[in-house]
Length: 440
Ligand code: P5A
Image (spheres, rainbow, N blue to C red):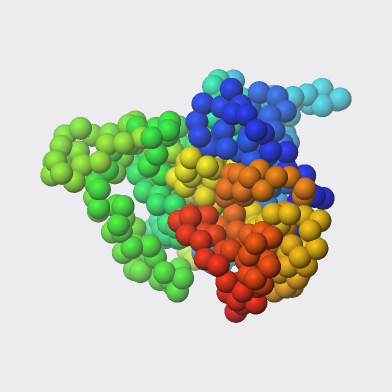
């Protein structure tokens, strides 16, 4: 991508409305734009990051055996009247009427809709277990939308829904998502700790929030400090192994970890004082097992091996991609801007032409840009006629992991500078060496 032809509206000044660093940096880097309170457009740079986050989420959902579909954002009120949540959900639900005066709503979650899909076609235990997910916009008319896309009214959610014949089978489905979440957040460069959590309007008794420790987090959390160094389940985790996944769940729930709603002061005080971590956190995921809460009122049942009909046991599993992007920034930035983990960086490499229009600089940058792009790298080529200082500031602000800098002096020696955004380390090398470093 040539920056001269891209759309990346950088802000020079710090936006006044932004209270936390991620919101400030997302606005300054031209990643998002507020359209009305708590409702955002994702501009091209932001969209790239969001897409990469979603690709990792999708990959890990698929690995764990979940199946992707797509459900609409607008739902009929009827389904929610069946489950009893239409009245219970309250003011957070945006209620709309269509031209025939039929009550509709902008979905805040999809338990009812997916239960309807399930009951319309699954009739036998032989079709279980089943886990269906989508990545779709939601709307919740939050009282206090704030911190940009961290807590917005319209937001994206990956929501998965599992269906099983028995409670034991449903717990295995829960454990699959539990392990998939540990892997997902790790690949996003985050350390998320599962904590016992309140179930709120979703319901059920078994529930974990996945929390990232951050001073700007909205939740108050309490946990054992050893969680920070626990091993993440590997890529070869067998998601069909009931014992294997139970062992992962048992290990990750063996020490104290709870959100403030579930906090048990006495149990926390039993943790040796030096091991106690009391901090603020950002909830990036939340998983629930709620048994037959929806299947019973909505009549979602299957025939079991005993020939009888059984209401299915369900769970639901949410991740917030549009919250994850600012959460990653909260965890990874410095005074100059964002420092993206390579897995979600909007570009892998930025090639900075310090003097666009200068023959030698252009003749150096163009082939580097071409060779790296051809090798499948996402390359941003700063070919604008901005001053070098502006270009450096922009490159640091948008957080691309590697900068290849071509200035007149180095170019005269057939060389470029390679800078690591995270460490700031710089190395001078030949053009060929720079290309080979990232192509090999
Ligand atoms: C689980 C999947 C649910 O809605 N139903 C389907 C269950 N859970 S939840 O905890 O309410 O939300 C899941 C995740 O969505 C993100 N999230 C938000 N992100 C940005 N702005 C919001 N206002 C918002 N509300 C929820 C969070 O990451 C949450 O863990």
